[in-house]
Structures are given as structure tokens and as C-alpha cells.
Amino acid sequence: MDVKSAYIHIPFCVRICTYCDFNKYYIQNQPVDTYIDCLIKEMENSEVRELETVFVGGGTPTALNMQQLDRLLKAITSIFTIKGEFSFEANPDELTLEKVQLLKDYGVNRLSMGVQTFKPELLDILGRTHKTEDIYQSVENARSVGIESISLDLMYHLPKQTLEDFKDSLERALAMDIDHISSYGLILEPKTQFYNMYRKGQLQVPNEDIGEEMYEYLLERMSKSEMHQYEISNFGKRNHESEHNKVYWKNEGYYGFGAGASGYVNGERYNNVNPVNHYIKKIENNERPLLDSTFPTQTEQMEEEMFLGLRMNKGVSKQRFNEKFDQPIEQVYGQTIKDLISKDLLFEKDGYIAMTERGKVIGNTVFESFLLNV
Image 1: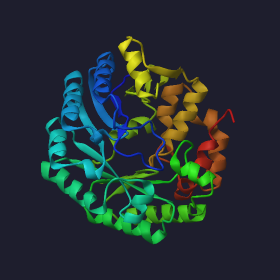
Image 2: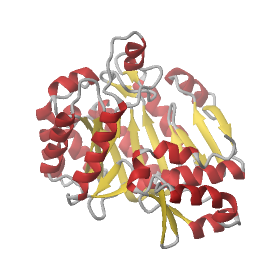
Image 3: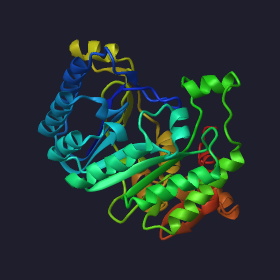
Image 4: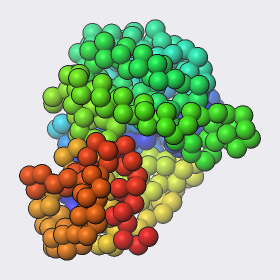
């Protein structure tokens, strides 16, 4: 497996959002510098030195101070030659002109900003640290230093969010002439504040119909914009699609560095340990910081190929499937594909199997059809 991508995890945040289930810790009193030492050591131990895409996520990478950020960036760019997309996740209120200039100086060419909504009341409910005006300022800062690609994350199906609220946020984002939008519906994940509140009856989420209505509006509105949909939740201008995320959807290999990061290298899917102190201890003991590791069977790999690939508008390539698994897609999934086409959930075009607009709205139902072991 030719690995050309890496995900690097910074598990620290200035504040913990109410909906987030990623591996993250309040940054105060954390051993941040020791963590960066260990992260550098893990990256140095990788076999590859040339990468097409690097994505630094979290947590919040921009929660690091200037010295820590400088050290991290210097290490990444000295260990790896990054030939293509170099992405950083950022919080709008942390993206000062000084920080964004530093990112630019080290070759970061794509920013993914966790905006979520433009409505102050909803930002408070989500536990976000930024204000609406910070969104505008951070985009201005990024543009002024010449960051090539700017992406905003927007959420829908939020507590107390109306369709009009979502429409307003979407219009504001589009009016800023950014390059890419990722838009996701809220999922109540275990171990989040929202999930605990919901279980105690302290949180009301709009019903599923409103969530579907918001998603359908998203598809309709984005089809009239300069951005084209290329994945269930992602829309980009020409040449601004997330090349790194496409690595996941195409079921290709990538390294995962840092506490809680996952990777897929030489047929092994692995997850690193989550707690920062456990990660540090393993690295300092010259051990792989593994939590668990599996080698998916061919059946599991075929399932992954389908439910990841179908997320993309282009869909799953029949030729690629055949080359990868040495058997035609029809031999494995012929009847399933026929059934879903008859229900107007899938279609076939130019050697690809893809989801219809209706299929995208109930995507999980489509994906589950391809799980042979269910």
C-alpha cells in the first residue's frame, strides 16, 4: 500500500464544545510541549518522507501558542516533503494575523474553520469560543496573507435551530466568497455533554424531518452556487475539493500521528491510545502508541470500499473495484445494486455506481445494504 497522506492530531482545546466526541482535552495544565516532543518522535519513526496531503486536526491545533505552533510546523516540514495539500483546522477567534502568517510561512495552503453557525445564541449552546464577528475577521486574515483555500464547517439540526437560522448561516458563508463548505447534521454521540443532557431530558433536538429538510435545502441552495457537491457533506469550487479527505473516501492508506489518531497502513487499520499521558509514556518507552489494530478481511475491505466510496458524488468505480479485489462488483453486490437502483437510491453512469439525490438524504440506509455480515 502506497501511503501518501498523514493526519496529525492535536488533542487540546481552549474550551470543550458540547457536541464534540473527538479525542480532546482542556489545554490548561496539559503537558503540551512534551506531547509535541513525542509527536515529532512518532512522525520521525514513519517509513515515508514524501507526502501528497497532510491534515492537522484536533482538538484545536490553533489552541497552541506561537512558539509551540512554530515548533510543530518546523518539525512537520523538516520530516516530510509535502507536495500537495497542507491543511490546518482552526477556530475563528484563535486565527490571529500573526498565527495565520506563521501557517502560511510554513506552507499551509488550506484552512478548515470550525464556524458551525453564525447565530450567537446557537454558538453559545454549542460551547463555541468565537463570536460571529470573529468569523469575518479570521477569513479576512487568511485572505490577507494569501492562504489559497478556505473552508468553513457549518452544522444543521441543532437544538433550537430553525430552517431560517440555517438558511441565514449558509447565505452569510456564501456571501464571504470562500472556497469550500462542509456541512454536517448534528449526531448525538455518547460521552458528549449534549448526549448526557439529552438523556436527562434537558436538551431538545429538532425532529428528523426538520434535519432532512435542512439537508435538502443545503443541496438545493449549493447547486445554485459556485461550489459543486462532490461528497455527501462537502462542496467546493473548482480545484478546491479536500484532497486529504478524498483519501479516506477512496479507502486509501494514510498515517495517523498523535493521541487518538487512526491510520491505515499496509492493510493495517490502527488507533492510537487516547489519553495524552498514556501516549507520552508509550512514545518515551520507544513503543508504538497503539490502542488497537486490525487487518480487515477482503469482505470488510469491500464493504469499506462501498460505504466510503458512495459518499462521493462520483461514487464507486467498477474498474477500480475489480482491480482491487480481483472480482467484478456485480459478482459481489449485483442484486443489492439492482434493488437500490429500482428504489431510485442508486444509479450507474460511466462505469461508476453512485447515490441519487434521494439516496443521499437517507445515506445510512444505502450504506447498510452493503454490509454483507449484517
